[in-house]
Length: 437
Ligand code: SF4
Image (cartoon, rainbow, N blue to C red):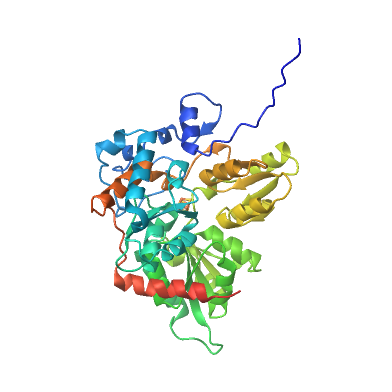
């Protein structure tokens, strides 16, 4: 009897983190998740005062954070297939009247309907390519929709499918706290608006893109600038050419990692804790400072540790470890490379030989990259499946709701930045675009 030869094909990788979480909760896999409540739909949590299950669950949500009203039952009760079919049908009806943007960290079930997938700034720019679209549906978090509103035409409606999709890091830099910080710094440095004999201001405020429009407006009003994780070094060089020091918010890790790579000593990077007088530093420390780091962080990227990198290296000799610069400094130092989501994606795409990658960034992006590049072994450094809880708020049910609303002539969840904030915020963004390495 001759044996039948069976060619084993590699099993396609399912890019859906949702499916994996459902499998974990059903006991079909030995993988772990940080919270089994993730298997429920976000409307279960929308009305609660918190970010919901996932990486930001332990952070304190500001009392004024927007809440999402109850999603109509027809969307809550529809299954995955029905919602997908309704989204496709609504998009077909709307045609060029709508552009759907999907952040890299969105769930696969949402990204699959996006006209563009990218990081927050890439997506805001993608919207610029559609000046005739009536609506821009931003599947991301609140500050991203605000940025798209800043850059889009006034008559275009920027829509955030779930108003409860904030960002815990952006929420850590509250405008009242930042104004108070500025006043305290003026007590230490004196006149903040007049350059010294060398033409330098005492402090240049720099905000990461992951901040509210109010913070971007503050920065624009005080001679400052916005940065992304891709251009943080160029922006800091711009700021040091104009000021003695930088006040960097909200992400202490991006600020510290970038300034350290530029040679700024750690002792000249005091942290500003808004709950303490002078941020917790002495006047002498603030006088000596080069970069004052706001006490903010991303709960997703803070989960990555040096021990995880050591475990990855032990289990996968030759592994290439790439982490996002929002990770803590010791993790960035222990990795082989650090870079933005776009850097990570391009680094994997450019690898010509089959390679094992351990990636330190949000799980939805890592899982999608693993599916997209099956010639490589790609895994998340964090063995626990724990997506960004605020990104997780955008469920296909909300996307179907806002798109079918547009079909019916109703605009749900429009995000509008008031003109007195938008004008200086745009100046801060324009400075960033003009900054050259
Ligand atoms: S991954 Fe971090 S920075 Fe990005 S939206 Fe989530 S909490 Fe905010």
